Amino acid sequence: MGLPAMVMMIFVALTAVGAVLTQLECVDAAREAARSAARGEEGVPAGRRVAPDGAAVSVTSDSTTVRASVRVRLHPLGGRLPGFELSATAVAATEPGVDGGA
Image (cartoon, rainbow, N blue to C red; front, side, top):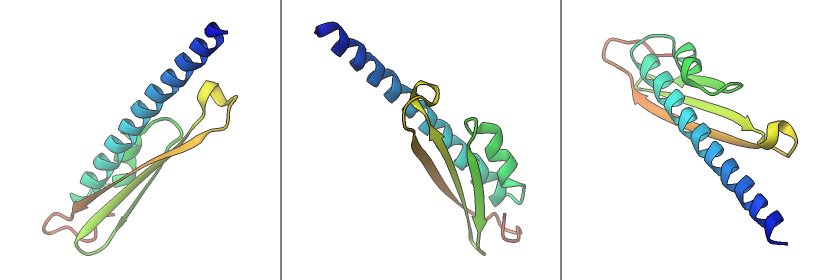
């Protein structure tokens, strides 16, 4: 009875580690997208270069700030279990002399 419980705990721990690593990739991608857009460059491609596979990157802006969001659905065991969504958002001030930033 102890072995199945141990296998389940290892599975849960590995899933949690994978989720944390994916969350960190989302944070990095959102930050990169916001920074690029704030400099007047294309934010979405910059975010996609860093984002995990299958992530959706979006960038919106107003006159003073740029907001980048990254969302990805994580499926434990390669899609055999129900998935859950991870997301991250970053905000950056628009650099002087840049219009809008998106």
